[in-house]
Image (cartoon, rainbow, N blue to C red; front, side):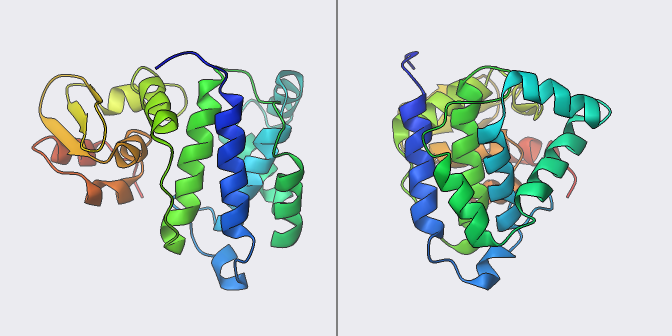
Length: 211
Protein backbone atom coordinates (compact mmCIF):
# COMPACT_ATOMS: atom_id res chain seq x y z
CA UNK A 1 0.00 0.00 0.00
CA UNK A 2 1.13 3.55 -0.62
CA UNK A 3 2.39 5.89 2.04
CA UNK A 4 -0.34 8.50 1.61
CA UNK A 5 -1.48 10.65 4.53
CA UNK A 6 -3.13 8.27 7.01
CA UNK A 7 -5.05 10.90 8.96
CA UNK A 8 -8.09 11.16 6.66
CA UNK A 9 -8.51 7.38 7.07
CA UNK A 10 -8.23 7.62 10.84
CA UNK A 11 -10.62 10.56 11.06
CA UNK A 12 -13.15 8.71 8.88
CA UNK A 13 -13.07 5.74 11.26
CA UNK A 14 -13.55 7.99 14.27
CA UNK A 15 -16.52 9.68 12.61
CA UNK A 16 -18.12 6.34 11.73
CA UNK A 17 -17.69 5.06 15.29
CA UNK A 18 -19.22 8.24 16.74
CA UNK A 19 -22.24 7.76 14.49
CA UNK A 20 -22.60 4.12 15.51
CA UNK A 21 -22.46 4.92 19.23
CA UNK A 22 -24.63 8.04 19.20
CA UNK A 23 -27.82 6.20 20.19
CA UNK A 24 -26.31 3.35 22.19
CA UNK A 25 -28.40 2.35 25.21
CA UNK A 26 -26.97 2.03 28.74
CA UNK A 27 -26.65 -1.74 28.47
CA UNK A 28 -24.56 -1.40 25.36
CA UNK A 29 -22.00 0.78 27.07
CA UNK A 30 -21.28 -1.83 29.76
CA UNK A 31 -21.04 -4.71 27.26
CA UNK A 32 -17.67 -6.44 27.39
CA UNK A 33 -15.65 -5.62 24.30
CA UNK A 34 -13.17 -7.84 22.46
CA UNK A 35 -10.29 -5.87 23.98
CA UNK A 36 -8.82 -7.41 27.12
CA UNK A 37 -11.43 -7.11 29.88
CA UNK A 38 -12.61 -3.63 28.92
CA UNK A 39 -16.20 -2.62 28.38
CA UNK A 40 -17.32 -0.75 25.29
CA UNK A 41 -17.17 2.46 27.34
CA UNK A 42 -13.61 1.73 28.46
CA UNK A 43 -12.39 1.00 24.93
CA UNK A 44 -13.78 4.34 23.82
CA UNK A 45 -12.02 5.87 26.84
CA UNK A 46 -8.76 4.31 25.66
CA UNK A 47 -9.27 5.65 22.14
CA UNK A 48 -9.98 9.09 23.57
CA UNK A 49 -6.84 9.02 25.71
CA UNK A 50 -4.75 7.96 22.73
CA UNK A 51 -6.13 10.78 20.59
CA UNK A 52 -5.03 13.24 23.30
CA UNK A 53 -1.53 11.80 23.64
CA UNK A 54 1.70 13.40 22.47
CA UNK A 55 5.23 11.95 22.68
CA UNK A 56 6.27 14.22 25.59
CA UNK A 57 3.08 13.44 27.51
CA UNK A 58 3.54 9.73 26.77
CA UNK A 59 6.93 9.61 28.48
CA UNK A 60 5.65 11.62 31.45
CA UNK A 61 2.72 9.25 31.92
CA UNK A 62 4.95 6.21 31.47
CA UNK A 63 7.20 7.46 34.24
CA UNK A 64 4.20 7.98 36.50
CA UNK A 65 3.17 4.38 35.81
CA UNK A 66 6.61 3.02 36.68
CA UNK A 67 7.34 2.46 32.97
CA UNK A 68 4.64 -0.19 32.80
CA UNK A 69 2.87 0.39 29.50
CA UNK A 70 -0.28 -1.60 30.25
CA UNK A 71 -0.64 0.09 33.62
CA UNK A 72 -0.41 3.48 31.93
CA UNK A 73 -2.99 2.66 29.27
CA UNK A 74 -5.37 1.13 31.80
CA UNK A 75 -5.21 4.22 34.01
CA UNK A 76 -5.79 6.52 31.04
CA UNK A 77 -8.79 4.51 29.84
CA UNK A 78 -10.22 4.40 33.35
CA UNK A 79 -9.85 8.17 33.68
CA UNK A 80 -11.59 8.89 30.37
CA UNK A 81 -14.37 6.42 31.20
CA UNK A 82 -14.89 7.75 34.74
CA UNK A 83 -17.57 10.12 33.42
CA UNK A 84 -20.84 9.23 31.71
CA UNK A 85 -20.72 7.49 28.33
CA UNK A 86 -22.26 10.61 26.79
CA UNK A 87 -19.42 12.71 28.18
CA UNK A 88 -16.77 10.28 26.92
CA UNK A 89 -18.38 10.24 23.50
CA UNK A 90 -18.46 14.05 23.47
CA UNK A 91 -14.75 14.13 24.37
CA UNK A 92 -13.97 11.68 21.58
CA UNK A 93 -16.04 13.75 19.16
CA UNK A 94 -14.04 16.85 20.10
CA UNK A 95 -10.89 14.97 19.04
CA UNK A 96 -12.27 13.68 15.75
CA UNK A 97 -9.80 15.70 13.67
CA UNK A 98 -6.89 15.54 16.11
CA UNK A 99 -3.52 14.34 14.82
CA UNK A 100 -1.75 13.96 18.16
CA UNK A 101 -0.53 10.47 18.97
CA UNK A 102 1.99 8.57 21.09
CA UNK A 103 5.45 7.85 19.65
CA UNK A 104 5.58 5.21 16.96
CA UNK A 105 4.66 4.65 13.30
CA UNK A 106 1.57 6.60 12.29
CA UNK A 107 0.10 3.53 10.59
CA UNK A 108 -0.28 2.13 14.11
CA UNK A 109 -3.20 4.51 14.56
CA UNK A 110 -4.97 3.30 11.43
CA UNK A 111 -4.84 -0.15 12.96
CA UNK A 112 -5.98 1.18 16.32
CA UNK A 113 -8.99 2.94 14.79
CA UNK A 114 -10.03 -0.16 12.86
CA UNK A 115 -9.33 -2.82 15.47
CA UNK A 116 -10.76 -0.96 18.44
CA UNK A 117 -13.75 0.01 16.33
CA UNK A 118 -14.40 -3.67 15.73
CA UNK A 119 -13.63 -4.48 19.39
CA UNK A 120 -16.64 -2.29 20.15
CA UNK A 121 -18.93 -3.14 17.25
CA UNK A 122 -18.75 -6.92 17.14
CA UNK A 123 -20.12 -7.57 20.66
CA UNK A 124 -22.88 -5.03 19.93
CA UNK A 125 -23.78 -6.73 16.62
CA UNK A 126 -23.06 -3.51 14.75
CA UNK A 127 -21.78 -4.16 11.24
CA UNK A 128 -19.46 -1.86 9.32
CA UNK A 129 -18.08 -2.30 5.83
CA UNK A 130 -14.59 -1.04 6.56
CA UNK A 131 -12.88 0.70 3.62
CA UNK A 132 -10.68 -1.95 2.07
CA UNK A 133 -7.76 0.39 1.43
CA UNK A 134 -7.67 1.16 5.17
CA UNK A 135 -7.93 -2.51 6.12
CA UNK A 136 -5.12 -3.56 3.77
CA UNK A 137 -2.90 -0.73 4.95
CA UNK A 138 -3.37 -1.96 8.52
CA UNK A 139 -2.76 -5.56 7.43
CA UNK A 140 0.48 -4.56 5.70
CA UNK A 141 1.61 -2.77 8.84
CA UNK A 142 0.77 -5.56 11.27
CA UNK A 143 2.34 -8.34 9.22
CA UNK A 144 5.76 -6.83 9.85
CA UNK A 145 5.30 -5.51 13.39
CA UNK A 146 5.75 -7.11 16.78
CA UNK A 147 5.21 -3.85 18.66
CA UNK A 148 3.05 -4.41 21.76
CA UNK A 149 0.77 -7.09 20.30
CA UNK A 150 3.20 -9.44 18.53
CA UNK A 151 1.36 -9.73 15.22
CA UNK A 152 4.47 -10.67 13.23
CA UNK A 153 5.29 -13.58 15.51
CA UNK A 154 1.64 -14.64 15.71
CA UNK A 155 1.47 -15.27 11.96
CA UNK A 156 5.00 -16.59 11.48
CA UNK A 157 5.11 -19.73 9.34
CA UNK A 158 1.56 -19.22 8.06
CA UNK A 159 0.04 -17.96 4.84
CA UNK A 160 -2.74 -15.45 5.38
CA UNK A 161 -5.00 -14.92 2.37
CA UNK A 162 -7.91 -12.51 2.09
CA UNK A 163 -11.04 -13.83 0.41
CA UNK A 164 -12.45 -10.37 -0.30
CA UNK A 165 -9.31 -8.65 -1.63
CA UNK A 166 -6.15 -9.39 -3.57
CA UNK A 167 -3.92 -9.67 -0.50
CA UNK A 168 -1.83 -12.40 1.04
CA UNK A 169 1.30 -12.72 3.11
CA UNK A 170 3.62 -15.40 4.39
CA UNK A 171 4.30 -19.04 3.56
CA UNK A 172 3.08 -22.19 5.22
CA UNK A 173 -0.33 -23.59 6.21
CA UNK A 174 -3.06 -21.28 4.99
CA UNK A 175 -5.48 -19.12 6.94
CA UNK A 176 -8.10 -17.49 4.73
CA UNK A 177 -11.03 -15.21 5.32
CA UNK A 178 -12.19 -11.60 5.11
CA UNK A 179 -9.34 -9.10 5.33
CA UNK A 180 -10.74 -7.38 8.41
CA UNK A 181 -11.05 -10.72 10.20
CA UNK A 182 -7.43 -11.48 9.35
CA UNK A 183 -6.40 -8.14 10.87
CA UNK A 184 -8.38 -8.92 14.01
CA UNK A 185 -6.76 -12.35 14.28
CA UNK A 186 -3.29 -10.90 13.66
CA UNK A 187 -3.88 -8.56 16.60
CA UNK A 188 -4.90 -11.38 18.92
CA UNK A 189 -8.71 -11.36 18.83
CA UNK A 190 -9.90 -14.99 19.14
CA UNK A 191 -13.46 -14.04 18.13
CA UNK A 192 -12.21 -13.47 14.57
CA UNK A 193 -11.19 -17.12 14.20
CA UNK A 194 -14.82 -18.07 13.57
CA UNK A 195 -14.60 -16.17 10.26
CA UNK A 196 -11.48 -17.99 9.10
CA UNK A 197 -10.73 -21.36 7.52
CA UNK A 198 -7.74 -23.34 6.38
CA UNK A 199 -5.22 -25.77 7.82
CA UNK A 200 -3.31 -22.96 9.55
CA UNK A 201 -6.20 -21.96 11.80
CA UNK A 202 -5.32 -24.38 14.64
CA UNK A 203 -1.80 -22.93 14.81
CA UNK A 204 -3.13 -19.39 14.81
CA UNK A 205 -5.62 -20.33 17.53
CA UNK A 206 -2.81 -21.73 19.68
CA UNK A 207 -1.05 -18.35 19.53
CA UNK A 208 -3.95 -16.29 20.79
CA UNK A 209 -3.59 -14.55 24.16
CA UNK A 210 -4.92 -16.44 27.13
CA UNK A 211 -8.44 -15.29 27.83
